[in-house]
Length: 297
Image (cartoon, rainbow, N blue to C red; front, side, top):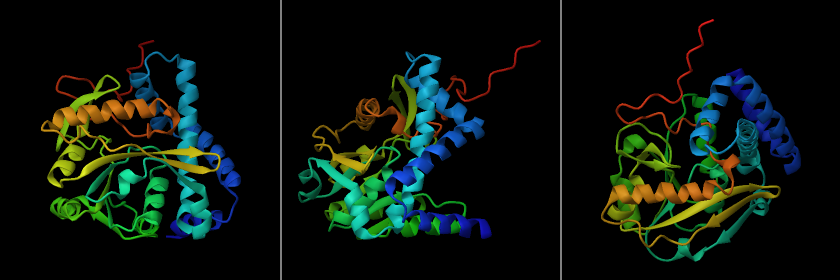
């Protein structure tokens, strides 16, 4: 309990720091995590090796370090996203792209990939949208941290954090009423409701929820990507997809991964490579995260 209080107190205090100070601290923390958490470092190495096979070991190591730095900086940015004054947060979040795609009448499924700035993108949307916003939330095992995250993500706007156990009917009904869903379907969530489709050419268990929610909710799909910058974050709204949903959820999901890969290539250090993206494997495929056997001396 004392540890939780210290961490949360520190984050509230950090909200008063200038952005360059928060980012400098994140740089230090990222390098420390890279050095001190070898298991997660290996996950990043494996992911980058599979997705960017042309990189040399030195390049992969360089990008892996940058991934840890971006991850740490984004985590510390939650301090000001969730505790700094409204005007400070607003000035650090810059919208670009096809903003009209979000505001036209009708339900919207926002495809929000797991870039490190995902909380910044969500916060920016809750600050500017007059429509009810929904997202799927996985509760944290630590009650104090769970309460902090829930409070932070509900800070602005009309927000519903829907737990997976609540089912999908509520979200489908909301989309049909013209409301909005912020969806992050690009992680490995196991075998339920997933298909194996290529991700950087590697078979990856991928949720079909983007296609299914859009089709059942009679909603359009609007991708949003969030890029960390020196001034805060740039939230880019991409044009609504006209070819998703189709009648083929498998094809839709493969197309989602293909387009996601193109965005990742523009900022490879800002994707969530710390996640075991290839944890679930097709039958007969080996565990890519297993430690190699030590050579017999």
